[in-house]
Image 1: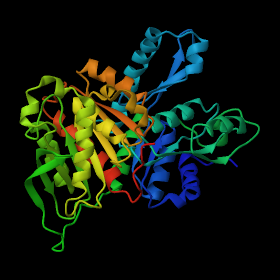
Image 2: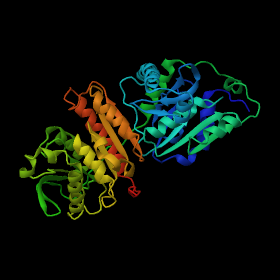
Image 3: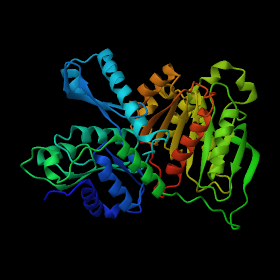
Length: 445
């Protein structure tokens, strides 16, 4: 049965997806034609709407053959089989990616403007298009959504041929398709009205969707327990370490900071991030991983196993503190502290729920990276190319939900105006997503 237009297609898809109302869902429209369909789905489910901008990476001498795809914030997925079969060199791959990323960034900014991309970390992503002929673009979108941290990916299509759907089932956790005609020539033949959608229409629909979705502010009551904001002595085994514990009333979770490169609990950058987390209702523990006597021994600053061991012990100590016993805990690691945080997260005794790395060196976690099962957000400045490359490489060894976010115009220390604020907001959203869920955090195996 043909659809009158994309609006009707979206309304019919929404009926099939009605069971997802009330869940932690983000609807992602493939621009341009998928956005009007996705808008109707998001409106019916009462969920946020965003675009998912992807670009296929074609083999240089055979562009129609996809060897991978890229998404925003440095996400890249590749097909090793195609790379091997076509003997694609790293230089060739980087060249294709560079060209496609320029266009991807241009399109993303055109559609979204200055609004940040909606985080998919730990959420259900519904990828929506107006139909699929070969399914290659939808396949790339599902891969990118999963690489951006989506816990579940659902592909929703009004129409597609059976052979394309068979391939798409391998990329999405589930596929919803209203019409699957065996005789299929083009998506447009299944619409009475299949006019071109303009960029301006996409922008307007995203704006309307943003205005219609509101997030209630947290409410505190007189019944909230008193907050703690005090210096503490953290016991890492038998070693006393100086720290500062801040606990808002009715804290939603707790974040432990792992400083790096000889920094301490007095780090102004980490204290700024901690303040943003506190304002969002999260507790924070900033403490020194080394004693004053140890800090003068430069080699200990880079002793990642030692720092990770201290973090594991501090986490055990923290769970004995009043009001902290049942809270989910996350790690925020900076520089070498990020390696310690990931190494500690891989230890099953910590049972950590989330990790955020700021300008970190996750590569220094070494062979423990594949053991991490904790959702991990890597934040790197765009003007920190060496660390960015190290993060990209380290991320290939992670076997957990992960996301790499590149902060534009930021250096290694995020000293540029507004960049540290963006780090704090990204960390806040990641921790709120993963520390406030009812599910138990994944354990390292």
